[in-house]
Length: 171
Image (cartoon, rainbow, N blue to C red; front, side, top):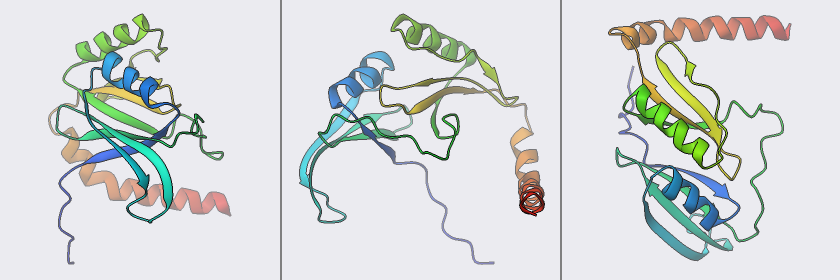
């Protein structure tokens, strides 16, 4: 089988926002991600569409970015009508469970509600929403040696089991 060239990693994830300054405050002042680029434009480069906007980027420790578009309408992004709010989320990795707990405390100091610490068996994390309704996860890896290799060896089989279950449920 001819395999595609591997992709190197995430460059950025972009999401709409209601207000650029509100979003900047949350990501830079509360979460501690530096604002590293902000571009004003009148036209969408990929479509040629006439749409004024600002597109701005916050850098994470690994050199990837979370970015936002403010289209100027002061409207919250609408959630997907057919998807529970816990499904779509953006997970940000930190170095330890202690760092997750420290971020949880920091968020509480700013009035941001989080879930209790969740133990997924291979990662421990908290979940919360940004001012735009984007669900975020702060996570620390806790997997035992060999966990990822075992999970990878079982992934296709597990997906096949799910596919069969879904097919059976559809009747």
